[in-house]
Length: 472
Image (cartoon, one colour):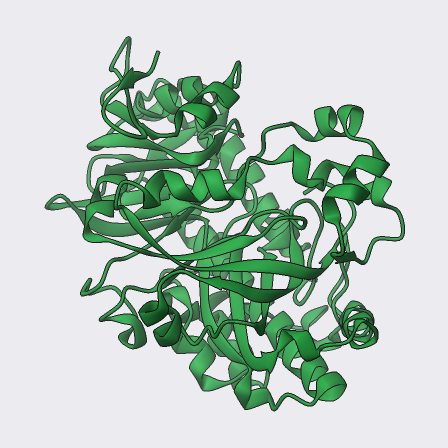
């Protein structure tokens, strides 16, 4: 039972085996929308894990997932705590990349928009199970990608040097070791430069509303201009790493006298051999995902240059952020491993871990909404420390996929999309991604902004969306 703790703040009190309390950030409307969702129970279970530190966090997009709820944050003591594959998530380093252009969106004709979509679909396979369109990334040795991430593919000509400095961890999480990858995961390393299915997308959008002029200027986002957002992750590789290591952790936990609250939160000590191998394999998947989005960004530049004549150098990367990841950080004077699942890091101005380009402003945090509504770019404030400098990664589902397929009609979805172009030949095939299946992105974003934890910078409006069919 949530206890009110101020505007948009709730406490999930310690009960039973919980080691720490929960702190949940919801408006009254979003709290009611949770209904019978098991997310709060999952958050309470995460608080039972050995070494849980401070408090567990539920963000405004919170809804049930595998293990830790999506929109959940768990920090564990870096020396005495555990690591949980389920608390990171299936699609390791599923994340978002935003690219800006100086091109006025109102000068983009419907014919050109259709040509852009068609050209990108030819270059970037979408949907589940698709393989890389680039031969060298289908069958070659990809250890350099696992260990170097974005840097590896930029060095091979797929991107600009500035892309690296505008990517979380500069596109490469340290500690990767391809030898730690499960054999089945190695078989699924053929999907670089592919979009995937589920909620993944590539979107052409308009910088529709500037909320903070100073930060928008610093981020290179001018009102009325065309921008591109890419949402994808580590594809089958990351799924396999999570699946296999969750199974391994479930079997190993009793050897470390760890009582697990659920199978989805299977965990082992960070310092254990299993824990170290998982972190090394996870880092491989993280770097693979950074490289995946980097390759797709390269194709975006190619297509925008060819179709509408924007110089590749004028298509700037605003930022690339992960939202399914575990990272060693320092919070409240303690070294911890922060598991963010469906949560994005948002560092405030002056924080030492900001990239140099955003040291003074805090780096952009990207919050995509639905293909019929809009998305936000925000910046974290110092007060965001109470969430371990984490914000929600999107709107969050209000209907399960199966529920959406039953309740939402094709005509209702078509009406909700308005003039937004969608690539799918049949809306019925992606009806579980209809705007009605998600929470209100404006409501969700306002939760943290209205209490001073974030600063909204711009609101983006979708113009055309490429989505892959199938659930990932």
